[in-house]
Amino acid sequence: MINVNQPAPDFELADLSGSLHRLKAMRGRLVLINFWSAECPWSEQADREIIAGWEAWGERITWWTIAANANEPLELLEQTAAARRLPLVMIDAKGEIADLYDAQTTPNVFLVDAQGILRYHGAVNDRTFRQRTPAHFYLRDAVQALLEGRLPDIAETPPYGCTIVRFASG
Image 1: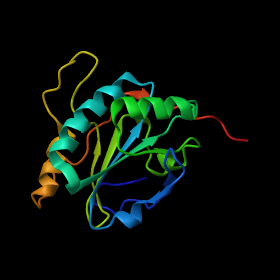
Image 2: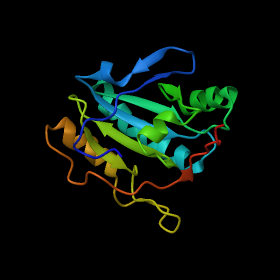
Image 3: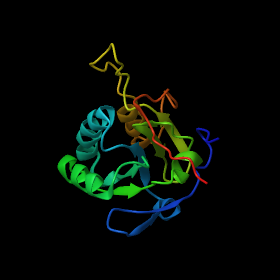
Image 4: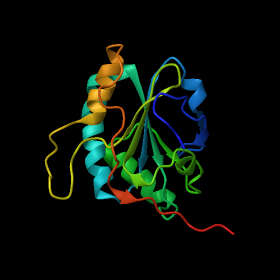
């Protein structure tokens, strides 16, 4: 179980081109980790919101998208990542990192500070099936707080979206 205000578990994953990326190597930077699906409409909406924030935050944060569904082929991931202008997509088809972080849905965001401490976990905003226009932007507020040198007012929210597809092993 991963907890807010505790060290974020280290991991290493390959991106769509096969290059490896390790969380521990990002110390000194704010890292946004988003468990993601190419097919989930909730992920697509979150991508638009994260891109808007990321363009404003610029080089002050690193954004890692983790493709966590076992059933999404590489070609689909590549096409969707390019269409949505995602800067980096890593593949977790076996769900090992999703399991490590206890991620159950896409989108599901984790915000890690420069010291490697998890400072926010949960939803991008408060959009729901009934409330289609969000009123509160949790991720944006958490990033802004950390950029200003303070802890987020809200550190954890329930994530929502599509269930991560896992295949039984063995």
